[in-house]
Length: 290
Image (cartoon, rainbow, N blue to C red; front, side, top):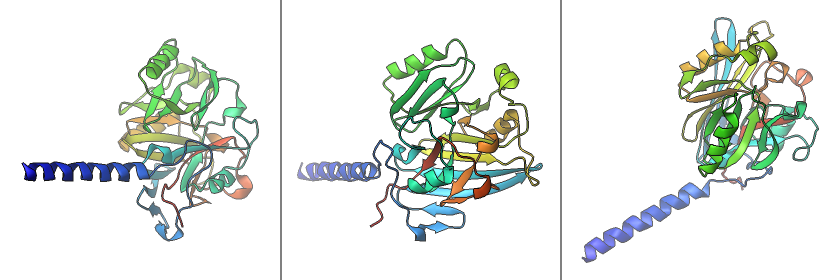
């Protein structure tokens, strides 16, 4: 009996230690940003610490350059958003400046929500706007760090209500799109996106996608430059499927499309051509840098 009791106590202690390790790596649900990453943890194309793994990759396929960030985090709080100015303030700022301010390891542009008055818009747990547009797809990132695509149409509002009633919490929500992969399958481009949002035109595109629990990929297809002609959203969806993603969603593209790594441009954009925007999506380390 004593051996059994001792074994049980060891198991409980082990579980407590594991739980402490899991909860140690977290960041506050606000706009304060992450910890400053350690310079020695960076290589030219990667960053690694106890809470975060980022591996950068570049692929040139059929005249298109894809910039890819493979990301694994320990806590859903490490997948974050930053905004220009104060929360929900109609101002714009260079993405590079925002990324450096919040200690982003890797960052991409968001949906430039201040350019429009519609959409479901949440940032870091704060509801900025609830004005659904049935012509647009919505992306929600919940409290577990999972991505959920709600397709446009008459059922969108009911699906969002059901999602909230299930007990999940919206941390970040975007209205741009379209959603291009759902349940691992490429989605056909909606007619509204063809006719109103130039989604069938080759252009720079930025995508956020989920591979699995707390595992993501940021992708930018460069365009309007000599070495890369850009993609349509259908082409982007086909490419994302080859990466093995379960959910993928297009953010603002064109001149807004950008990717930064370690505070620098990973794409062909430069400071003089960087477009000011309202928001970015980024990942940060949860390990304090003493």
